[in-house]
Amino acid sequence: MDDRQLMASIAGGDEAALQALLRRFTPLFLYILRPILPDERDREECLADISLRIWQGAGSFDGAKGSLNGWLTALTRNAALNRARAKGTEDAPLEDTVPHGDGSAEDEVLRRERQAKLRAAIAGLPVYERELFYRKYYYCQSTAQMAAELGLTERAVEGRLYRLRQTLRQQLGGDLYD
Image 1 (cartoon, rainbow, N blue to C red):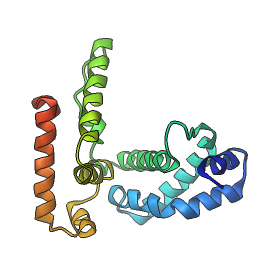
Image 2: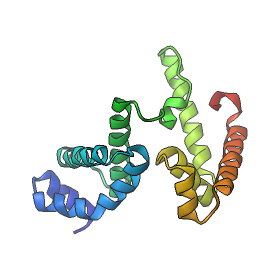
Image 3: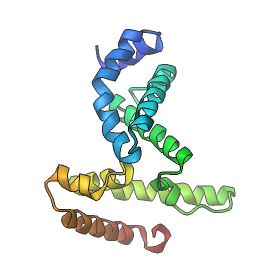
Image 4: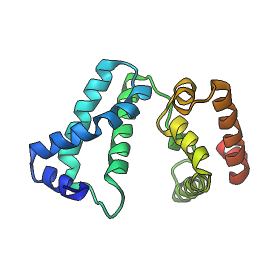
């Protein structure tokens, strides 16, 4: 059964399909949750929330717009950040750090343009730099975890992240993104 069929089965109320998806993707969910939610009880509750969101939202999955892996990653990260925010334990996500105006239509257009430039700059990075970026700023991994998984020292990871931020700052025009 491919990903689209699996999600269609879940949308149709097939609990066995949901269990199959959870068996397959729970390691990914935990990988994303651990840095954001250090408490095991919070992770367990978040996993239950994720299961419910998948069950309720399976019909909204569109394989033409992206992969199941990407859809589940975004769903998991958002659920974790929402839980962390509710507990007051997480820094603001990257998109919340882009300056916002007073809410006018012009400010909204400018904000979207800045976000599009940021996405384009990230997409233009070499694969290893993009991986570092996502690990640090999307998956909220610690420098120690990144170093251990990549076989680097923490100092090497910090240096690469520093150079990565400098590169992005130059590409994006400086202080708007500081």
